[in-house]
Length: 256
Image 1 (cartoon, rainbow, N blue to C red):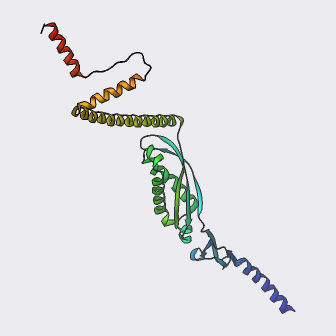
Image 2: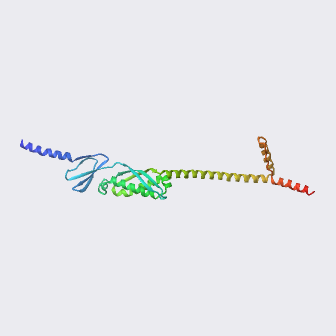
Image 3: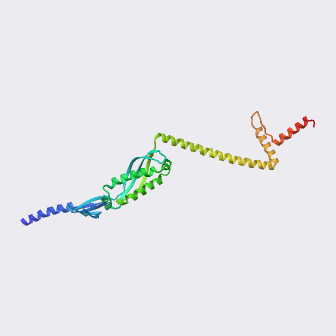
């Protein structure tokens, strides 16, 4: 009886110790195990045994983390102040580095993303920020990925969500867009005038080569004028006709 009682006294703490040593890691989790303060190994997923007092384990989530970068005050290369916010997607690819190489990889990645966003966008003008957002996303993602590689972090994507301008800049951009539309309209109008002038020159050359074509044109014009309700008709005459009339009048005056 005494033996059974002593055995039971020993088994109960042993069972408690075994239960306390068991850890269950999900498929997306890994456990970084330290033994007497030194890195031992990365365990998981599944059932893991950690000896209390001798070993300590830190859980690491390997899933992609979605992080909203707070709005950042950015001054563009052409000295325009804007507020920019973005979203960052990253995940842990090396649990050992993520725990050992940096104190808090989430906070460190967040701070690095904020500073990198300000630096990269500050090298570009406002028009580039608005028109080439995809290229800026790629530049920020590449820089972050290179710098976080030593932490066991993989930055998979960066997306700039909003570029907020003050009211003055919004009005200035609207005026610029309106001026650009007016410029295009004038260019199109000038191009049309140029083509029309070229067509008129070609038509004049053809009529100069064929005098009968000019007479036909006059007859066509008179037909159109006859159908008009206008009370005054101005009929242009060729210079050679006017010259002949003037010459005949002068000859008559001289008595020729």
